[in-house]
Length: 215
Ligand code: IMP
Ligand code: MG
Image (cartoon, rainbow, N blue to C red):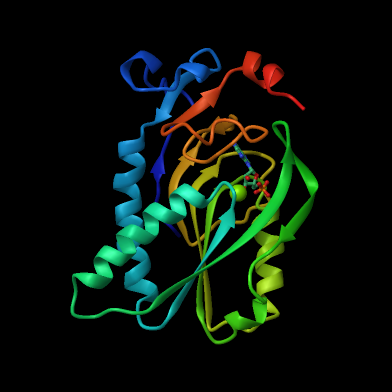
């Protein structure tokens, strides 16, 4: 079982005033739940765990857009640092796909996969899927069943966050950064209707903001 840093349900978080938060979001957020620095520190360790398990063979890192882009970029920087500072190293190539399953703060039943190279190019490769957050697990299960048709050598999933929720299908990624309470989180590329990707820390969205940015 993957180990992770647990953020408790009664986690009080940190006052916004103690951090740099864009002015335009000041009234939309309750607390900073995971400061940017802690995200980076945990990501550095995930990179080490991933290289330990997958570092024998060409890795294709597959970024699940848009929410995964910050985590993907930072994780790959740490993997690159390991690659260029040790006697052993493996080629790392990248690909990007887009998946959309959310409207407002609710997961919808349809999971759409858009873009990316021909999935057949993943045949025989070690594939690392990089995701921002797993909630019900539906997005990842859909993606994994699509990928399995291309016969990759190995598929591992790393998700920065996993939500503790009764809506979970029971699916767990191979690597997990943090397990988080059942709240709607934004920041570090996690969005609410496309807003809040331009916020460095992971924060809880307040109810007023859910109305304000509703579509
Ligand atoms: P799942 O298919 O229910 O596991 O949902 C996964 C996707 O829903 C993630 O990739 C996110 O894009 C989105 N999502 C789920 N929870 C949150 C959240 O708290 N904030 C922002 N996006 C979320
Ligand atoms: Mg996502």
